[in-house]
Image (cartoon, rainbow, N blue to C red; front, top):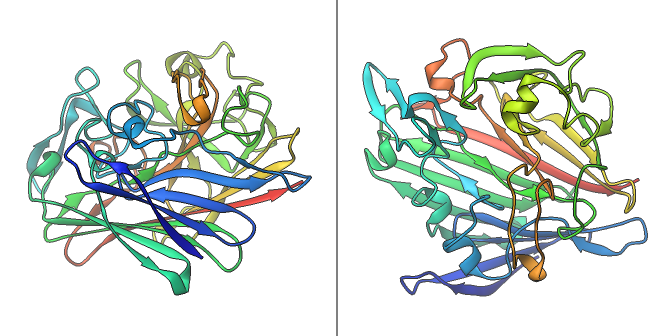
Length: 351
């Protein structure tokens, strides 16, 4: 079931819509500003539902603020690009240098998470389909591009996001979703005690500027080894250069079993031991960026909550950061005969 309700107006007076998807087990709210996940209500062991997604109650939080990109669809380029530049077919394309000399998330003020998307409801499939377009050269990249974000609650009970981009010429695309989770409830405080398993044997090494160096590091014997379940906070302040650079976890994990054909595979299992809520995330992308909210600090958030450092974790499926500048990484260019796609599937359960 999909219901529709207003969610305010943009500064230029355009109406924004909230779409609520419900399957009797979980309720998901998304809006067409930024193709953003506003909230997910999931039950605990006693059946009590709570919103487990960080965010805001009103549109103003997302249009004027939202430095943490709560719930947002990040596109066309997620994460960091070294030197804010990349080369496509021998031509250099310059992105906005918005983090020193580097680029982060394309443009934090004008990229697709800060724009209104067209939306249509497919009631039969419990789906909302959103589209946005960019002109050739817009946001620093080539191609007349059409981006699609499809939000669905499947008959099997999963919340699925399907991203797609088509372009009339070869271009670079690396979309992701930037939802933050706290399985105890969005306003429950630190996620340090939540238990996580990540199916990754390696991570992408960061340089001092937080840009990928091109080296993949084995997680064995390091704070990044989540192949066996452990609390997010167990090693988050360990004496480790990568932990120091990220001020905690702010790293892309190379999820095992990637095939270019894009099959879904298990990436993360997380549990809140108090409420008993559990979350499984499956992805098609090569990696997923674990960010433990190391710089989150938001007042007057949803329910007038105050979010502090490490009050939620994001798990952002993606191609490895700085991919176009590192030929050894799996590449994510797309063109007229090769659309770009990525699927993320979230499953909520209890212990």
